[in-house]
Length: 142
Ligand code: ADP
Ligand code: MG
Image 1: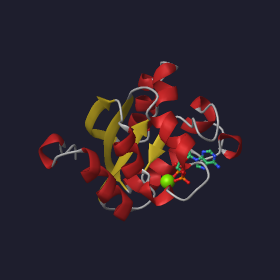
Image 2: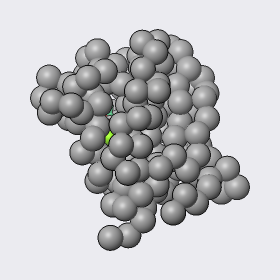
Image 3: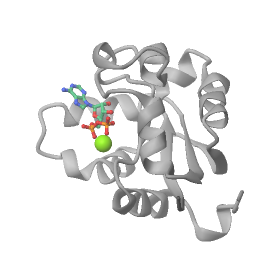
């Protein structure tokens, strides 16, 4: 399998609930390594730009408000098949449908405040990583 990179965001509700360390532990236990990490408080412009694909969806305004309500942590995650592997350990977008033991099942509060983001494809991952990180801020862990 190929080593890939994907973007994760530990969302405001997870930081407010003090489960940042627990979320990072899920990545580490899945064999995914942290290649870059930073804390930020997203501006409205940055949150809107990041979620641009959802601009016309009814939840867009609420999502942007939530994502700008408090700081979050951005991570670049590296590992074999990282995009798909990360989506597996995240669990379903709706925590009510997420499998037992997944990050969203454990730490999501609602469909909106669902604890984490993870890129949904290699193409998205490339765009999302470049949206937040300079090349020199990312470290090869394999
Ligand atoms: P995912 O984060 O699993 O890739 P989407 O890309 O479909 O899910 O949606 C982006 C984010 O928008 C979700 O993680 C969630 O925070 C929010 N969201 C999606 N659908 C809804 C909804 N129906 N109601 C409220 N928030 C939603
Ligand atoms: Mg998505």
